[in-house]
Amino acid sequence: MEFLSPSTWAEALAAKADRPDATPIAGGTDVMVELNFRKRRPSTLLDLTRISGLDSWSERDGRIRIGAGLSYTRIMEELGGRLPGLAAAARTIGSPQIRNRGTLGGNLGSASPAGDGHPPLLACGAEVELASVRGVRTVPAAEFFTGPKRSVLAEDELIAAVHVAPAEGPQQFSKIGTRNAMVIAVSSFALALHPSRQAVGTGVGSAGPTPLRAPEAEEFAASELPWESRSALDPEVARRFGELVAAAASPIDDVRGGAAYRRHALSVMARRTLTWAWSDLCG
Amino acid sequence: MRVNCKINGVDRTADDVWEGESLLYLLRERLGLPGSKNACEQGECGSCTVYLDGTPVCACLVAAGQAAGREVVTVEGLGSEDELDPVQEAFLRSGAVQCGFCTPGLIVSVHDLLERNPAPSDPEIREALAGNLCRCTGYEKIMDAVRLASASREEK
Image 1 (tube, each protein chain N blue to C red):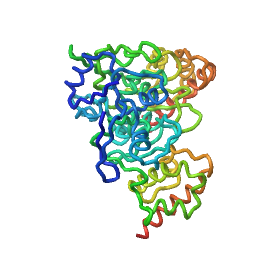
Image 2 (spheres, one colour; image 1 turned 60 degrees about the horizontal axis):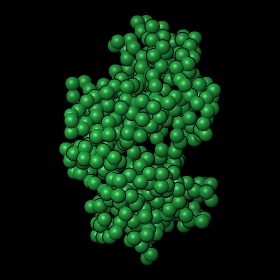
Image 3 (cartoon, chains in turn green, yellow; image 1 turned 45 degrees about the horizontal axis):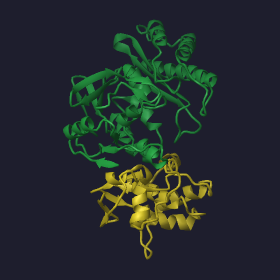
């Protein structure tokens, strides 16, 4: 095995082009588990922790650019105000030690259907910036995932950043697991309200081959919410919204939970998060 | 490969390090520092918690090469046989140590918690220690130890 530790992004891209089978490693919270358990023996480890700037974020022209190497701890501490949905998801990930190391780029690279960082990115309409020596492209988060642990990332590409607009309305994240810490989601749900365009964003985690949106639920809520009057949410609208979110999912039975339970949990989480978000909006 | 890093304030060098091995293996098997414990090897139990450049991490999830040139502090670096760290002292006085396997990781996590938050509430303690599993104590004595360590820090 070889261990490459580039200090610049250009060197990292050159290394990935030269060795497409190299496994990128940042916080190591997925890659090291596979190495420790002898599930993976990559020819090369490409360490991304020494690249300056990869662990920073910036804001320009109404978009936030989150470097792929930004830890969940820093997302919680530094982006809680601008991206409350993503920060709330970050708080549910692993433990303090895991959040200190785990990165949003690593979450996307693993592309697990259960990745906690994914639903908020879908709900916010985030884009993923992918780079290679051939150039840079951005892909909507909703088009990034292609299957369980699979994505559109080409073998010579690295995940550079995530681009997302700061929240202009309430955002929520909810996750079901066997305890509050150190759990992979049985299922999870993210919601974003966009009051200026009277739109609703959704993200469903751990209830399908990929993280997914619930477009019918989004359209239903956008048309039924009393945006103008800002009156109280009709419980029937919240209930139906939950039903539509559950219907959008395609969960399976596995070791963490059954498909029927996952659907039910999603309908409850969707109903509750819509209720909370609407109450946040209307005070 | 060769890995140089500073551990508990001392420059250390390890040779013939396998590129896929963890910082935990480097510490325990190559550098004679068995304080950090090896249990789950997947970041679940927190027994191998160490400081990496001042941040608590699971040493089992850090590739040895990622620690090169960095500063690592293990439980061995927090106190000495003559003078224990106040957190270690509080664990002893509170009876928070039973089999002792989880203790080194907990000591590092509690040390970090009290550096950041000298007087944590009970929910803050539980949240900060969510990544450190103990199968003996039921955590109550550990909670006592953190409260005691916090109080004795305040006295000083």
